Length: 407
Image (cartoon, rainbow, N blue to C red; front, side):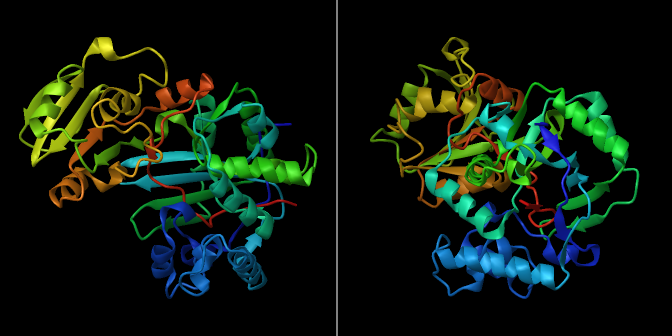
């Protein structure tokens, strides 16, 4: 089976694409989605978050939600809003957020290669979230939320993808958050063949975001038993060169000091960190450096070099903070389940950390240096798992631009 292949995508007709474009299903709760889709009857949120069309308080995992999602999608097809391409193609997708630009390929990726770890993972999944995606795919007979993948940048592939963007795009849309989404359709058989062959030569590609979507794709493929040529044996993906991907910091806030006084915490920190008070918010400048906001004051923490192990997981900043500070000093042994800790994506800025502490909701906050793509790939290559909330990717992929029908 090829690692990736072209497919006949289901997508909005160009003149309605702006009305269909929506944020990814997992960045909004039901209330936020309901508000955002108000007065927008064609928003893809009516498919990806169909509970917004049911009475408030409806469980988003109720069977009626998946049934309504399928009904909404079929209506948009019947009304000519969504149409399926008449031949298998690739799509080039560019996302622009401020000065940051990344350009990648929309394709379907092999479940068989996912199952043997050629499409490499770095996170555990949760059964409830997997089950949700399986039920959504089965109800729609389609995958609507793409998995974000990365490949080790290769100049020939990067340039081939970039060459497609010299033509006029099929869509050029700016979302409500100011992020620009541009899509080109690749119909040239020569380019399609070169892209397929180029990816087939790769040893591995990497899941950046979308572990539940890819795991659900694997489960659906196993249940359908469609064989290597079946479209159900592939899942929807957008693949970017790793050098273009942007990971933001993923910061931590903690409710209390685990019985320690402010001074006692500072003294205990000295066993593993150099500590320097700062006049303003601390954005760590390099790996092994952390900001700490405590009682209205910022400190720059730098871990002692001899405290950094060589293991690809243990050397991550999120691991160093957990292993050298959060667990031994603040008593947080399992950040997945401990209600005393919360996580703040870097897109919210350091002012959000100050707000959470100054309000009294939290006692202390920590800013982190972003995990690198090289670290993510090293963990995946070692068949290891990263700690929870290690990466925050921006900009986010849009939902609704291209969906993958399974037959």
